[in-house]
Amino acid sequence: MSWLETKLFAGEKIIFRCRTHKSIFLLPFSLLFIAYVNEFSPFLFIGITILLFDILKYFYREFIVTNKRVIIKKGFFHKHISDIAIESISEVTIYQSFSEKFFRTGRVTIFGESITNSTFKDISRAKDFRNAVYSQLPVTFS
Image 1: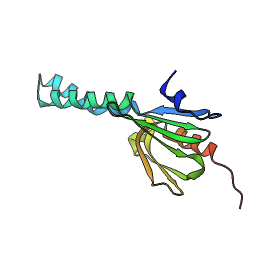
Image 2 (image 1 turned 90 degrees about the vertical axis):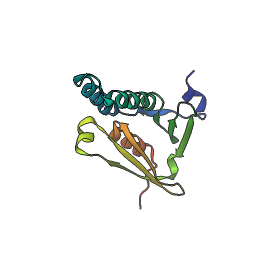
Image 3 (image 1 turned 30 degrees about the vertical axis):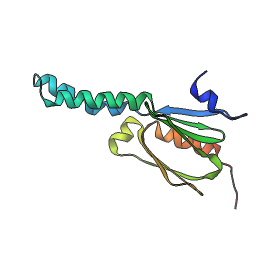
């Protein structure tokens, strides 16, 4: 049984699940390549350090949309799981630079009633995440 299955409410179903995008590894691998070409340089230590942090970020950060809430799990040493009720969400925005559009990643911000704005960076498939949230919002007609 995964950690998520123990956190779901009765009748709650997973709609969408994603991680941090793999493009976070571009910087450390670029630094390691520069260190390799220069036959050892300070870039080696910096590249390895950033790579280790990015590996932890990739494997220990998840974004989940269910039919009742949005769940965000972060952390390796200290797990932090937060959620936002679907009913309290009023808008989801995406910011994407040119390279983020190419990699289908981006920064997602969730706005809502009685919640602080929550921004999540480097989400894989950012538009799919936003569409999954919108698909669960109750439809209201004015």
